[in-house]
Amino acid sequence: MSSSGSNAVTLNALLKKTEHYDKDERYMAISDLCEALKRHAASSTSYSSSPSLPLIDASTERRICTAVLSLLDDSSNDVQTVAVKTLGVLLTTVQEELVAEIADKLCTLVLDSTKSDLHDVYAIGLTTLITKIPLHMGDVVSHRLVGRLIDGIRLSSNSSFILVSCFELMTHLVSRFGTMPNVKRQHDAILQISLLQLSSTETVVRKRAGSTIGVMSRVLSDALLHQLVDRLLRQIDLAEGVGKSGKRRARAARANSTTTDPIADTRAILRTMCTVSGEVGHRLTQSQIDCIIPIFLRFCDVEDAM
Figure (cartoon, helix red, strand yellow):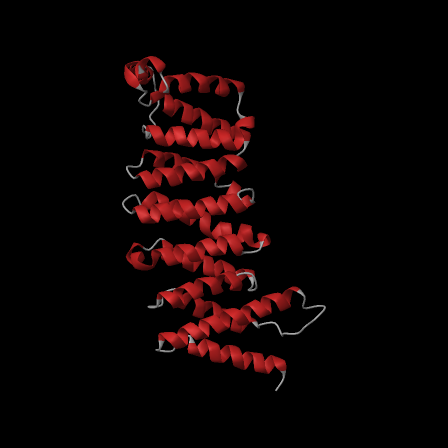
């Protein structure tokens, strides 16, 4: 039997075992499949010079993807763990079309509030996809994910675990593919939905939203960055200060304000402003820099601390 035929038989046997009723058999099958995929990944990178292993055909690739995705929902935690590991290997070898389909499937599972028991597994799987896929696939995958993550944040106000996952995934996505066309077109939408969540009642949601804004600041245009900083400074101006004088200044600022923005959590906007300043302080305008010292004094009033 040729090496190609032998390889197909081996993969078919492993794929069949991934459906076995015994969790130990499924564990061994997915572990062996992971090792086989690693060998193929290594072989495919040097295929032209040393074709030691035949490439996997498109039909088998699709079957492998289906099997690995199904094992993310396995009843055994050990099987789930190896399935996530296998997914990371698989994503570096399969065709772009399959990668996009896997991204769609994982995103659907992450946004499904009825899958709370396995939510972390799906989120890890999607994080693995975002961080492992080749760069040339980034724009296609971003096109599939960005809009859905924005909608997930907008429509999941009563589900903090989905909100947190969406922000974490968005942070990874923007960090790696933030300058690509399909993400750049959504910069303003990502920014607006993240700023709104700085007023969330959940501390962890506010922190994740601030982290996303910090990563966004690296890739924003000058116009959007200046709008972001102006809005953060305006929010800080309306926030509660420290001590009597700080609260007095806050009341005066609110009396003169015409903004309709919801008042964000004071700690959240200060933390976010610090993150943005640390990331892109060199891009701030002089007028924005001039606002920062009075803000510092307002929240660190020596007389009120006496």
